[in-house]
Amino acid sequence: MPEGHSDPQRTPRKFGNPLNQLLWTVCGSAMLATLALINQLATGLAEITAMGLVMPVLVGGLTAFTLRYFVYRSNRLLRAQARRELEAKDAQLRFVFDNMTSGILMVDENKVIRAINKNMVDLYGFPIAEVKVGQPFSNIIHFRAKRGDYGPGDIDHQIAERFKMWKPGGVENFEDIIPGGPVIEVLRAWTAEGDAVMVANDITDRKHAEEEIAAQRDELATLNQQKNKLFSIISHDLKNPFTSLLGMSKIMAQMSDKLTPEQFTDYAKSINESGERLFVLLQNLLEWSRSQMDQVSIDLQPQELRALVDDTLELLSNSAQDKGIQFVNSVPELTVNADLNLVSTVIRNLLSNAIKFTDETGSISIAASKNGDWVEISVTDSGVGMSAEQVGKVFKADSAQSTHGTKGESGTGLGLLLCKDFVERHGGNIWAESEIGKGSSFHFTLPLNKETAEQHRDEMI
Image 1 (cartoon, rainbow, N blue to C red):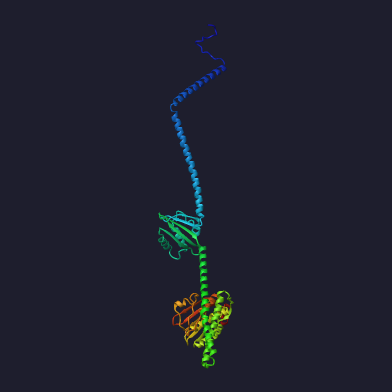
Image 2 (image 1 turned 90 degrees about the vertical axis):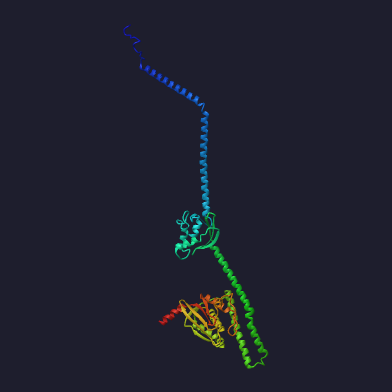
């Protein structure tokens, strides 16, 4: 073997330079990767071939899952939309419920508030914190009892009494009046389950209108009564004195030469009495007519009460003397704020009435006393008196009537109506006290003149 050569069977072959080594390494890796890919493809083909038998099952399952998921999502969307629509409708209903013109309150069979709207709360002034859904109905009664809606008394007792009135069944309609507040009309209905539904409305304006209509109706009735009274006076009471006057004067004219001086004097006296009664009647009739037409003005001036009474007593002295009646004037020195003509009419009518119903040799007293800012005047007689029923009617236009006096004196019943009207125009009151057989006493009040009263007090000091 030549020197320098080795045996190829004994010595490994070398690739030479490093570049050759790198190329062989890369080629080897590529071959390995290719083999791995071929192996994966073969495995995949085998699996695909095997899946060919179960593919319909997988497709069906996937379809069912997809459908179920679609239904699930659709249901969620539909429920969400329905919830939003329900909430919107609930908000609309709540808005309508709270803004109804009527107050609404619903209470269940356990007396628990199940619904209450804003108008009910505002109408009654309920505190929102105490009166709301889920709270007991007794809160409402407790609040109203404490506020004084049911009047004075123990609150627990009032609550118990109110619940006694809680009787399920049927329909109730009643008015609920809040002291110092509105008048409320309440309709309460019961369901078959024992729940109560209450509808409340403010009827204050309607009640005021009804009261005004009733007042106007009463006023029209009074005017109608006054008209009938006027016609009665004209047709009867005014005619009778003229009949008597004309009859006696005719006898005197036709038989003047046949009458004795005594007869002539008696006829003349009767004519004079008829003339005086007729004058008083006409005067009352005119004054009453003017007062009903609001044509009587009032001029308040300081008036010396005792002097005013003395003047009236002097005017009626002849009528009193004819029956032997004695006047007693006990009026002290007092000054009132009054209209001279109106007060003179009041005193004259009361004294004339007393003369008319006092027997011969009887007595009539007139007195006065100070009572705070008012002066109370009384006219008391020893006459025939009146029953309690008569006393209750003497100042009423619909029941005022003429009653003959102890000597057959006639009248119209207008005198006391005038007295009432004129006294009330002064802001005073008038009333009567009487018993059958024990006489009558008429009282009325006039405003005291304070300046004169203070001056008189200073003089006394």
